Structures are given as C-alpha cells and as structure tokens.
Image (cartoon, rainbow, N blue to C red; front, top):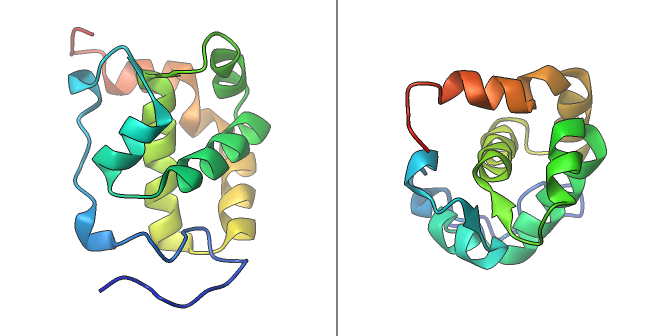
Length: 122
C-alpha cells in the first residue's frame, strides 16, 4: 500500500506507491520528455519530479547545465531523476538524499550516463 504518513522530511510524497514504479528503460524514452509524462511513467506525482529536479540542479553540475537548454527533460535528466527515485527508496529523508548527491556528484554526471548507455543507440 501507499505510505499515508505525512512528513516534511520525507523525500517522497505520500502519493508515491512503490508498487506502481516500473523500471524506465532510458533509450525507450523520447529524446526530450515532459516532467508530467515522466511522472506518469514512474507512477509518481509531477510535483515530486519538480522537487527532485531542483535538488539535481543544485548538486549535479551536468544536470544544471542540461536543464538550461529546454524546459523538457533530456534522457540524461530522466536518468538522474530515476537515480534520485532509487535513492529516495533507500534513504527516505531529504537531508540524506541531498547529502549523498553532494558527496557522489560523479555518479550522476553526463559522462557516467554515457558510460551506462554506451551500447545503446539513442
């Protein structure tokens, strides 16, 4: 069932159901995706995408640079958001997630994304 407890510290809003999440295969996404569409695919509220988008812009330089190009999200940005989703399931709290992003910036770089998907044509 969905988590119904409310807490400002929780990284995931109560609307988020872990059961609804299905793995997003990044190469299958359009080159640019609307935040609302990504939220629908991931089974989360679009406000959660917006919140994670802000965190990524603060802590991940490549993400910040990419987000200035268009209001739509690139495949790289969708990948970062997916990684933040995974972190939120493990770490639960905003402070812990942001600390992890800050300390492990290289794990969310454009180069890392390209290494992960180097064998896929996109």
